[in-house]
Amino acid sequence: MADDPEWAAPSLELLEEYYRKLCNWGRWGPEDERGTANLITPEKVREAAALVRRGVGFSLQLPMDASGPQRGGLGRVNPIHQMMATGTDHVAGKQDFPNGLGYADDSLFLVLQGGTQWDALSHIFRDGQMYNGYGADLVDSSGARRNGVENIPTLVTRGVLLDLPRVVGRDHLRPGEAIDADLLDAACAHQRVTVADGDALLIRTGDMARRRTLVGWDGYAGGDAPGLSLLAMPWLHRHGVSAVATDTWGVEVRPNEISGTFQPLHLIMIVSMGLLVGEIWQLDELAEDCAADGVYEFMLVAPPLVIPGAVGAPSNPQAIK
Image (tube, rainbow, N blue to C red; front, side, top):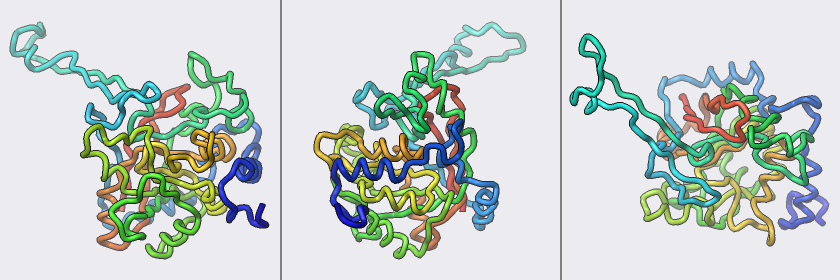
């Protein structure tokens, strides 16, 4: 192994090295269930608020409807919106209320990780444990008794967008294209932005923009995709990133870099580091605005829905500039 393992080739040995080296278990106490959200201090929130200069906001949520990317992989389906009461019921005389009152009501069935969402720290296990050493058996049919998403009720911090297609001069990164520390550094230099403790890092690959108009999203959900390399993990740790989110379905590069593994970076990011991971974020409109004014930092307001015991939750993240 190289003297600096960050520059070695991805391997099972390097995966184990980083899993140990980047571990945050106990860093914020033996009872911690917030992970890197602890890096978002009151000072960080005030810093983020000071970034609002123009008073414009951008929703980073993919709409919750039947046109989403899910095609049944891992049991995930697109949201199902159903009307429970309608205006047609009202005009047909099917609603018996005084004074001419009528109403509409509806419901939504959704897989919590089927669209724009955060992974909770109870989402991934390794060898019977999850983040901070809690037993995986604490997540049962009633939900997560530890590391549930409700432990992150607010998420307000400085957001930084790295728009990688613009950095490399293409419309999108290719499926299987790995994002390493060199490319992250190049993007920061190109966009004249820094990443510091407590920041949320948003990474645009262009993968969503390329696929969402194609038949079946061209295999977007669960398929090959550009994404983070194993070699980027020390970079995230060293820069004190509180959260990372991308416009891909799983954040890490697919096919996975190490033969015989499945989403190995989730072991490091979620189980070892306790890092907040966001997936399926819509970053294209924000990227256009950042390119237009040259400002790639903003106030990010992105709390997950408070669902006690959930191992992931939708969010409607807002970037405010």
